[in-house]
Length: 167
Image 1: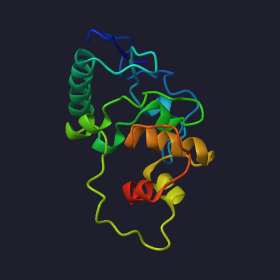
Image 2 (image 1 turned 90 degrees about the vertical axis):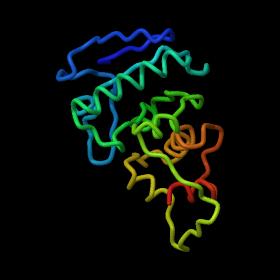
Image 3 (image 1 turned 30 degrees about the vertical axis):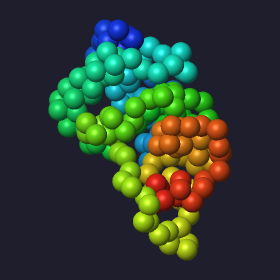
Image 4 (image 1 turned 180 degrees about the horizontal axis):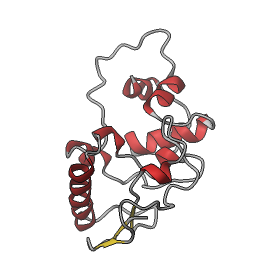
């Protein structure tokens, strides 16, 4: 990884941003099949179950703001390991504050879905693929999507509510 952020907020810059890291492993996002060459990897000290301390998230927001400004990174390009490798990665966990990151310009989030009517032919898996997810293993992809956008990872079925978020 390029950066490691400790629980106390300490940031370790491990590798020059222009060099290839191996944080993504075998992964993809949309048409990008070599995420290691096109991304800046950030690892957060977390056991995979705990919440993320405020100091750690504060440092993460600072690092992300610097990277976004320096490299002109689009908002939609802030994603997690589970998004790019849903069959191999589970991080960040369901406690990760994706909505907070989105509110600060890092990653996408959805609006209120209460009054959304889905088209009859809406295809949830196709929507996941359009967003960028690999749907090769649709069950793992659905779990990764739910972990990111609904903060839970127990179901591998797209509900009507899930489809509204995707739409």
